[in-house]
Picture: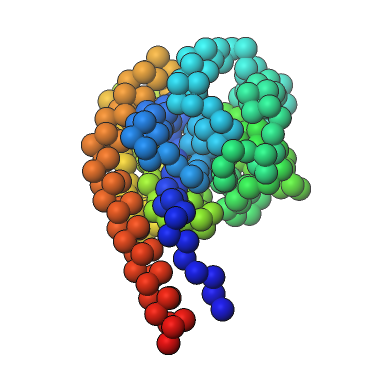
Length: 280
């Protein structure tokens, strides 16, 4: 006999946060609005920059905490020029910084279900990371080839998940979300053309085809914050990206409310149907 539907359990909102380098600051604005409106995500998935924001939120940090943390970042202290030849920068210090921010936690110790996506370098296979150390998973999901080195994890060589799953909306549903809100900050290439090798590599990491079509299948609602005015690498624009995320989420609140109401109505109908079947 299948278990009965629990009508008292709140509708579980899943938030899928996509890759987009510094544009990922828009995810913080989305989180801030959803939480304050009473739609705190119960499940989070992320890729690249989305994995970073998602891990911190799943680890108990508020949107304000993440904003404060991001504002204090000094990249010259967290990444150093590489001497191995595998990438332009080494990320050992960044990994230690993330591990400290997350109190060294594994996925099982996070406050809510979270998973990140990476790409296995030798096979181009999509890899879902949902156990083990969280910090190394975030590094792997964010390891833009050529910019940051691949991450060795669970016997695999992993790089930026944007290569295989820009916005992991389907993964959020598989983790138990009743409705899935996806946030896509990849957008088109910035109006300001990349000029350096790093800028070219960062921009190229977001060029995955078929993202809109996949999200149409996997997500109930797709937010696309207006981040096109600024480039993926512009750290000085983090405030603008955050505000763009807030604006997109505020515009979508009526739709989120409607999705929650539909999910609640469906649950009530399933409960009545199941009760009728048991009586029969």
